[in-house]
Image (tube, rainbow, N blue to C red):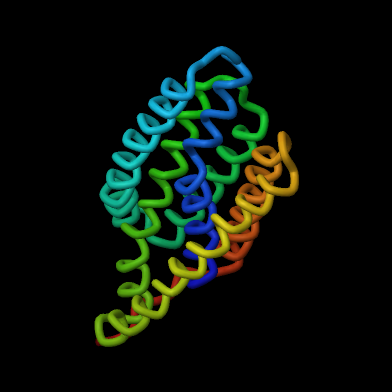
Length: 191
């Protein structure tokens, strides 16, 4: 569970931390004469809109997991995000870029909406608070790894940094998906 959450967090938080600069870089290629204020405004707008999706993801994926099961929901989130990251490597369209970022953040928030019930349904109410606290350490680890990896790529890869960052995210999400596919849904323990 920690690793599934970690993969989801790293992908989402990497996007959160660099979505504005990535959008601004994309806008510069489509409109080289765009003013710095216009670029910053577009980046800020994407941050605001994507944060709404982050919040909505907590409710939407949580509700969906009540119907599909938490493990299956994590599988769907990881698989579809991996596809979104692959699409981000190749997109040059600003609107598609924004939509894909919003979807990734919908899934990022979804991890927080699904994980508590995932732990509860797997380990029961007695262990849930302690285990959820432990699994939340994946958030802090992901908060270090995701932004640091994207920053390192921006510093070392120049114009190709975003492509490598999206490929890194797709790879990490695929690893998470493989781990999720290897897991079996647990029987809820007796209380």
